[in-house]
Length: 123
Length: 408
Image (tube, rainbow over all chains, first blue to last red; front, side, top):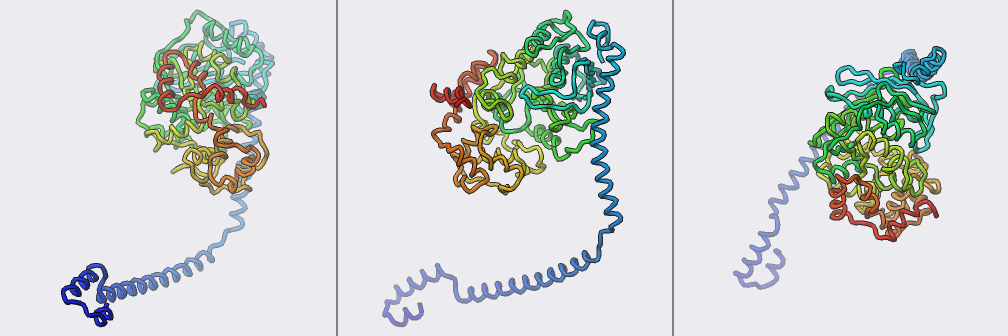
């Protein structure tokens, strides 16, 4: 803009109008300088924060490295898990056998036939 | 089979005993082999009902014990000759004892509400119908190895709908050992509605079974056109048994595909409570097979690329790496024809085999008219008018796509 103003002979009112128009559309140099300063300040703050976080990560890593899974306890947990699963499967069998046992009991005592004749209470 | 109910306040306990000819292995009405786990279950009603018609108690028991009954079933209180007749004709099973209890009837239609897209679509169709939600709870005798199944989350979402709601909690799914705990018959989901039917004056129960389940042979049924569907036709064995107990099975979305129910659900005022995943807590898990299947349908409806982290190697994606037939194949065709970039997803192989196009799957955007004709008269007009206004009916050519499904 400065160059344009210097090179061309422009009537003062027009020049003022053009410059005014430019000023209303674009940020001034002073404002730009302030923006750059602000951005720089933010970058520096973030850099400090990243440094702090890095230190924290390192500290946490060392803390985790210090924790070890006790193999005895881990073994016991695995064992409890296996036992729970096997018990559940075994219980399936027990429950099914119970149904079959009642079926056999009813057959032996004739409960089913009595119920069929309308005398028994069913189950 | 002999069954006996006992009540303690609002909790009803059932014990059943096998006759000499019965066995712990049996079959669901859709043909799936089932293995019995245990012979007791309970249903916790929200309050002690005044009285329950013996046909309701008998039918509730029958939805659990039917797979393992070979020759006869003896209930602990006399049932109506109509229900005994329906079980006799439907299964060839002698049912009794019969008594002088008159046949049951009721006036209202309730929705068996799970919170998934299909039942939310039903709720949109019937804005005044009360909800009955059936919640799975642990069985005191069966170790619960399926705690990832978050039925509590679904129940709390149902509470948030603001609709008239009855929640019935039951452990009946644990009477089934194999393939895994679940409803012995699909109709066992209605146990809560059956036990509350007199209390709520119910004459019908609306379920979210859609076109695929009712007419196209369903996910694990026969995979072909099924006008005489054993489970869901009004004249099928189950339809007649429920009608005999005065609680008609009503399928308001029986004539529309899951694309339509998805569209209705996403546009519904209950969208915030919509949940088809049984595993997620704060939202759908996004990693189960159900999430993958529903994501395909949702992406197709929203005409956007598939959003999933599931890759081809995952077990839930394995079946889509095989050639067809698939359960629910009509929806896989629909999705493959509409989802942009399907060739770069886990459905690529399926898409290559199916070679479906938008025009070859357009029939899935409309309603199969006979599905409306079979809705019981008191509720037919409301559903018909909704479908007429919001969905539209299939042409004769499109209806023929339904009627020749799985036969070519």
